[in-house]
Amino acid sequence: MKKPYRKRYILFEIISDSKIKEELIEIAIKKAIKELFGEFGLSEANPKLLKEFSKGKKHVLCVDHRYVQKTKLAMAYVKEINKKKLIIKTIKVYGTLKKIKGVIK
Image (cartoon, rainbow, N blue to C red; front, side):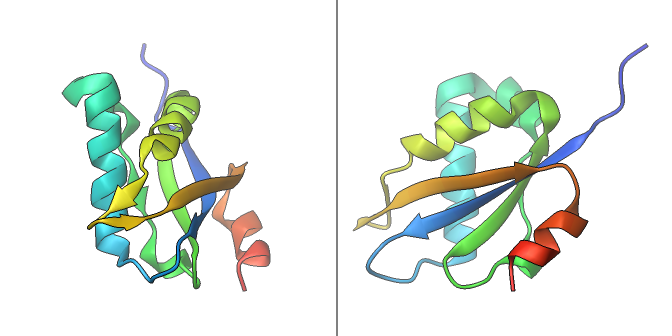
């Protein structure tokens, strides 16, 4: 029997001179996962940017617990969005949204 899908929440920060739209960030991360691990890896990781937890340059990405390390690798792979240079810095991985609410204010 297959184990249930367990979510992990990656808190990360965008280091860039200009503001980048959340939709573009999510598309770039999904594209990087697809390039590194293929269509199957992307569907298994199931990354979703949680817009309600975005505050300034900090964002939260929800992924499958088995793909946390691979997703972090793919996030480091993203170097620019719309010809704007950036760095994605992973801060911490959380198991519940309750803990993130205390960190993002």
